[in-house]
Image (tube, rainbow, N blue to C red):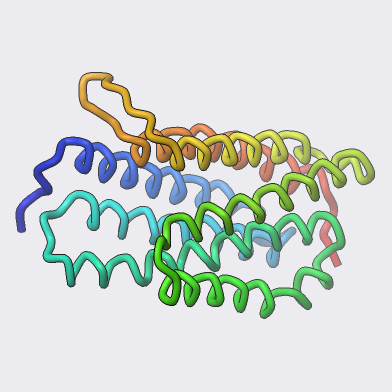
Length: 219
């Protein structure tokens, strides 16, 4: 198996792999709260786990010199994972806003929304634009939820999570642009997006830590 020839594809693959490793680190950080907050920890572990899977699939799709057929096969589970991941991210906000029971009631609907998103990428041309729109709407909704939670419930870490979501929205805007830069190696909009996502994930993990440390067990 050979590596892809464009250098920007290799830097995109490398940043995708690092993004996946950061998600593994965040999952490990949630592990200590599994007894006090089992459902919330499982939910956010799924969010980070799906992003891990999508990142590693993306690293292979961008980094390896694959046939168009094989590359297309890799995109299918990647988009499915991202679709469900984004909807579960919003569900995490619902958990902190309305509680565990409300989040449990919406779980099947959230997964279904992710599957519908994946189906749209199959039916419509321009799967990337579909994802940008889907993620944008979902992240704005999630940020609004956490701002409301921070103001009304004063949940520890809620403001930090809201800021982290704002950073993720900014990262998505970078991905939709044509930005490029060189820092030893050249990076295109995809590689820059991954770097910005990593920056956004770190305060998200810190905010979740604060919310799990400072709240009682949800019912």
